[in-house]
Length: 361
Ligand SMILES: Nc1ncnc2c1ncn2[C@@H]1O[C@H](COP(=O)(O)OP(=O)(O)OP(=O)(O)O)[C@@H](O)[C@H]1O
Image (cartoon, rainbow, N blue to C red; front, side, top):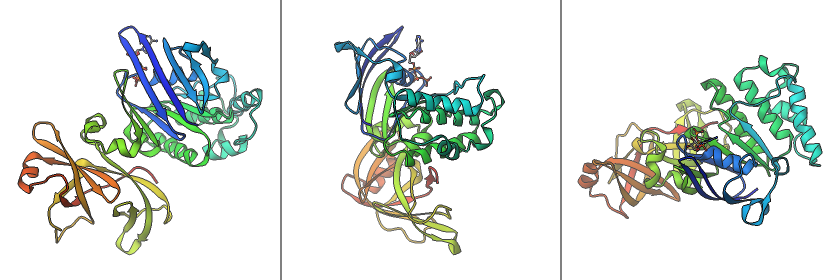
């Protein structure tokens, strides 16, 4: 479901002034602590009434303060999952899940996944008779997601659902969410996080928030390649996110070949089937540039590209925006290197990719 938001809200010293337009899919709200992510999610859920604003989901007006429309949370068709899962302590897992189903029935919403399907998807089979107090954080998060899905929401609202989990459990749930993203067809998600790996893995649309304002909103691949936003993602991690698929495995060489709109990338052997779609992050600091095709290179990844922009990054460095086929890449070079190589817009170059991070299977 598409989402259109325009919200104004003042609370103490904090002012939210946010306008967001997002197509169906996963929309990530990303930004530092206190930037207003949870406030936006609460306003969409109907748990917070903003001073002024509109929330429209696929043409359905959930809130319009100018027209006096403010649907109560239970009429908004939103399933909400919070970091602390908020399960019913006195009910076992089965009963917690059934609560979601009853909500769906009350709203007259048929169709969508059934209990057995959700139990299988989220791996809840062994937990059904247990109470929340006896579950790990990761298990509780899975049950909370299952309960929200069984209420058959049109929009799933998730407020840092992985933030309280340790690394292995986080990876586990991220896998489930990724699978869900592929399965649910019509279900859209609004996903609050300040973890870049979650954005890389799940987001279609990215909303970058800063101090109550939307700094940028658009397709995640476009925003990741914008040099003016790089610092918001952290100097270590900033760089392009690239959509690719597995073209072939070469077990004898211990390598897999990925194809993307701009060339091939080689990674240590992967397990996913050929044809599988995946995303990789190519950090700006992991790209070196050459003005002529380098020979005798240990890196497997050498890509022809053209410079489309140059942007200063700090006193001594420069972000170089490259077009590699239709795919934008970012390279972080010293200003000295830019001058020495005479790099300028339009110049063809070779990008040596020193390392590629896979964002998931
Ligand atoms: N109940 C409240 N009363 C007063 N101020 C609040 C309340 N809840 C949040 N705030 C303030 O509103 C601002 C935005 O908070 P919000 O929770 O939306 O940010 P966030 O981006 O979700 O942060 P985090 O990543 O830390 O959860 C912050 O300055 C916060 O201190």
